[in-house]
Amino acid sequence: MQKKLSAGQKLGFGIFDLGGNMFFTIMGFWCLKYLTDVVGLVAAMAGAAVMIGKIWDAVTDPMMGYISDRTITRLGRRRPYLLIGAVPMMLTMWLFFTAPDISNQLWLMFWAMGVLMLVNTVQTVINVPYASLTPELTNDYHERTSLNGYRFGCAVFGTILGAAAVLPIVSSFNGEKHGWSMMGLILGAVMALVTLLTFFGTKEKKHTREDIPAEGFFSTYKAVFSNKPYVILFITYGLHLTAVTFLQSILAYYTEYIYPAEFVMRLRTFPLIGDPAAGEMALREALTNLSMMGLLLTAMLCIPVSVFVSKKIGKKWTYQICFIDLFIACAAVSTVGHLLPPEWFLCLLLFAGIGVGFSYVAPFAMVPDTVEFDAVKTGERKEGAYYGMWTFISKCGIALSVFISGIILNIGGYVPKVIQTPSARLAIRLIIGPIPAFVFLCAFILMQFYTLDEKTYKKLMGQ
Image 1 (cartoon, rainbow, N blue to C red):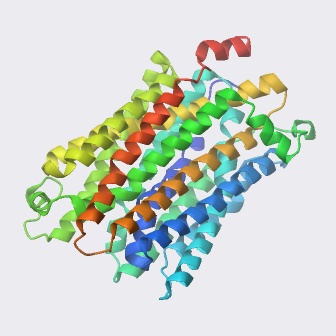
Image 2 (cartoon, rainbow, N blue to C red):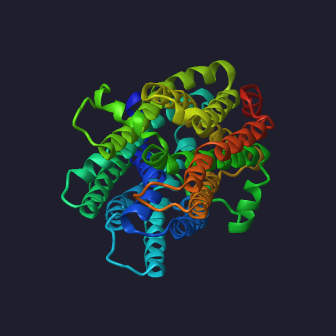
Image 3 (cartoon, rainbow, N blue to C red):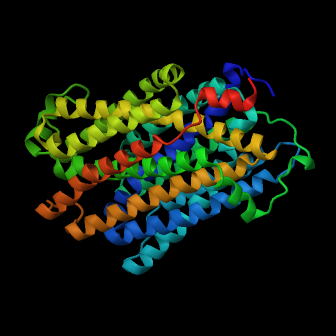
């Protein structure tokens, strides 16, 4: 297996995550708000629909990993699923963001559950095999960090599109519901395109029947959970995704309902907006986009920095930097964010972007190390099983956080598109501050127990 990959090979691999992260960003930032404010589903039911859709999604991930580990074709083990799933990805995105004409809340929840299960199934078909490609391409400790640096460089562009392009696309069409439908189609088409680019831009090593793991489904996953470094990383990443999703799902609520009107109106003279005739709602939308763009552009700039830092202090400590940064940022937004003028509020989100940037590469560069740890110990390669469980925990974290957010909003008395009560405002501030801050702290503590550093890995590999 080659150790060094060309820039073209790395870009061919990484471009997929422009679409992959666009999907996760759209669903993370906008799914709950779309269901409550556009579809008209009450917050608790919307949260329940997202949770059930994600639980289904999470359950299918290990199944997809098991299947792709046992796939033998002339195109490889993973790439055929990229070809199969590209167009369905576009169509299901269009379907979900086309709001139905249903008034009954229960039937509306069933619709949301069903379509989300369909969308997430298609995403599983392409995402689990894609993630499993990493250890297939190189076994070099630092080259994997570089490979994932390309991946998450593309991912941040996708994240920026998913956060910042949604509202401009929606508003460019007549009618709110029509705008959301066309947004789903357009950005779904981008996801399909980059999936096909990765299909044509990568090449797997050849596999034979002898490479198929001999273990059955349950024994395969029992072996996965016997891998202590992986289990620690697995749970840490689940906590990480849970906390990040709290922030993503509530940020648009915060800028629309919590940030004071007197500060919002200052945006009329703010760089990049500068429209003295803009109304409050238009300015709040602009603030939402500026907040997301500032956070994510900072994250993008910090990705190569995190790769450099990782080589100096190790992947574990690089990952922990993100938890420290985001713990501080969450606490600050919740306690003083609404007291700060726009320029200082945005600086606070830029600071949060540093933590987000440091969270991209490190965990995904650590997973293949834990996979290699198992392969050396057992003599069998089960990349699909490991990455199936990896996406399983990420989706469980997302499902749990969105469900809890919906419940808290409902308890607080949230009603869309009106001035919120003090209890609803408190609910939003809890979701953006103390709750994710506590989860980030737990992730930092758990990561302390991870021991598979570069020295241990090289000793394992006999280097």
